[in-house]
Length: 269
Image (spheres, rainbow, N blue to C red):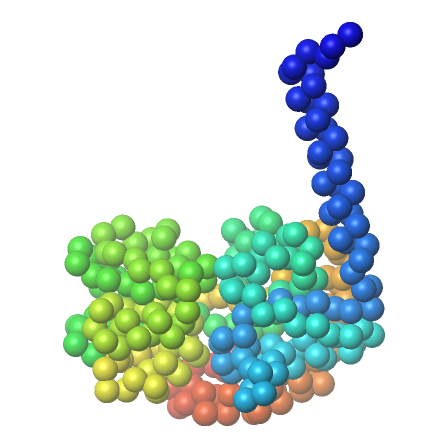
């Protein structure tokens, strides 16, 4: 008997779905269990970057190295654009995200997070030509706001800015340049990066470093892996108690640590 066309289509679809599941399962099994694959975007100094030999370096790289050693695994770092980190984690291309990622309610719907290891806040880099002094000054017709795609600055602008024009950029440098050249009035970003971007463009920009939100960075991992999350949280607790974060601050952030101390802002770790 000839199968009804609809039944035939359903059978073919079921077969293809099963085949896809086998292929996906095969990809999972090929992963080396002795290697910890960490995703980060290596364009966010001094946290995630590369040296003159294109070798990953920075605060997050050192945290990843120490965590891998604590877990008894080899470390592999995958350089992934920030907006692609959560999709990479959800499709099992990486084991963890350690990329200055803020722990948010929205992100926690699709991935799990460790305990926070750093506290910061969103603030503004503004053009020197503007009279902007607070976040409230931005939500007006004619104002142009630069954000980096996928960041909490982008999320904040999407959720709270109604009248100004929001300009998403893939790279932090592009968003900063937009403000420096007067093409955007402000860039919403974290305190430390805003300070560093102002230092690069002191003649054309102003930093408004008082945060209008507070946020915490954490390590991202797949949903439901409670055993790994417990191990990571214990590592973070021990690493802090051993002075690991303090050493990273002195090694990579000594200027910022001094400057923020003078401004009366608590240091981040």
